[in-house]
Length: 489
Ligand code: G6P
Picture 1 (cartoon, rainbow, N blue to C red):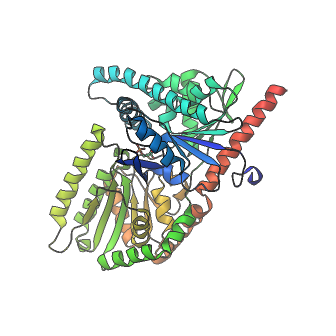
Picture 2: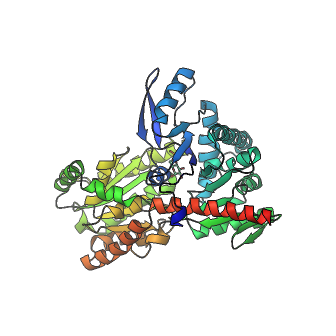
Picture 3: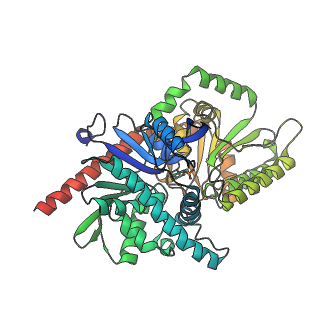
């Protein structure tokens, strides 16, 4: 495998994802500033080094004029990024609508939108058409940059229609598709009106990857039950053509976090935070402000803990970083108000003249501040209702070398399958159980903390983003080589 690995390889990799790893902000007619985008996919792929890769995606901004488009294309080229320009209408229908109002909740077991069934059905069709149009726009940009032999790696639920567009254009393209969310049970998936068309398109890829074995199994079941195809241990077979389906659990670049902890700027942050919270235990939540992250449930569990453990009032604080996301989608707007209301109520109820129990920030932090927070906090609370993997849990562990803080982790996050032995696993819907786990974490003996941390640290530092990408691309190369061999025989 290493021989075929990505390090120093000649083969070019085209990574295609809805969002580029940088978001653009306009500073003048032809001036752009770029900043790192949020989310697990970006954080994992930034950990893949030494690869001749280019990234094709949307820069998160509407650029109607040619001057702006040319300037942004130039600025992005320096970061090895190639933009796909999507206008406001398509962003509304494809990104806010089909991706984030339909596929995202469905894949996280929250079901299809229900408020107005008729309107939803009508919207559904126009949104699905916009989804296909947008996928075709990504494909057009791929064609412009493709050279024979390139590996094309499509990412996530935004681009399920892309494998079909690419193979229709050139059947010899090497195409992989990877899903960063859960793939739900086929009983949930089958409610999706466009279920068959999307499955058939994904099956055009040569290799289909998921974070866990369970997601891969759900996908194969959906193909057998909905399309009537044959599932094999290798994947899904359709009239003699095999699409390989497998699990490739993602990781992070743990060295990047370890190195950051040695930087003077991070050490300064650490000592400021240590002084600021002296005498109190600090619990940390870092999430995009998304309904799948279970933020209201987490805060209610913290309230229950305070209610039942008066001796901890004033001695513990919950720092919740809630990174704003998809702010044009009404569900996300409702969630923001709901969280603010709960935080305000609890701070009013348990706060004193000198301290409040919850510090809630509606913003992202820069990398250095984030590393410092990971390093100084005693407990991390990752209580997603569903989550493809959740790399915040990995990042926390990577920064806890000296403190050996405790990770409380939802059993519904993909990460529970790798960090389950070291973390305290919880059902995030069970507020009493989470409250009890908070107490367990805060009062845990140092021996137990050390043992749990050792397990997680070993995993996080040996299953890296680099390994993940290498394994996927090698497997894709091998799958294509085997298929060609079969054809020749
Ligand atoms: C998740 C998805 C990514 C997405 C990220 C941020 O991690 O799997 O594909 O980029 O959320 O969401 P956004 O809508 O801001 O790109």
